[in-house]
Length: 148
Image (cartoon, rainbow, N blue to C red; front, side, top):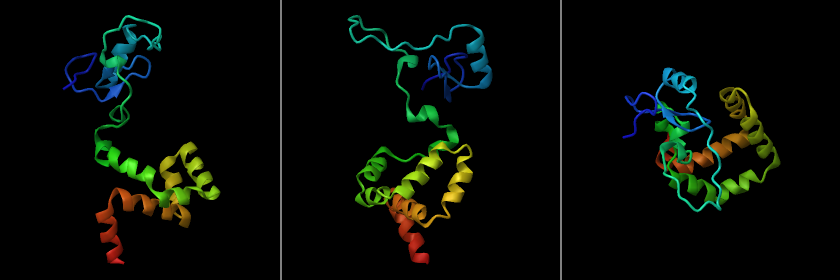
């Protein structure tokens, strides 16, 4: 189990956007910023022949770095994401220019929760959401359809 890179006491939930050190709280983040140890990661030179030691700050970003503890319950497994990418039904839906514009507006919306609520009023978006749910949670989707 990894510990906070600042206090070494708690499990880190966050990662510094500049140097990518892991930290557990706002106070640890402030301590990290105040002690001038935060140095942005420089892209390694592929011509460099000497391997550098790998630290937690050198590791690539992971999905877990972007999720808080509560978000992990909503995380979609990689296999299911691959199934979404392979779905011909989804690809057929995403050809629609109206749906594509709607998705782009969702992505750029400031209040994403409100934008999704508004999008759920669009039949085409509902069709997309239902198709995604059929792939991600097929048993739940079938149960919901049987109720209607």
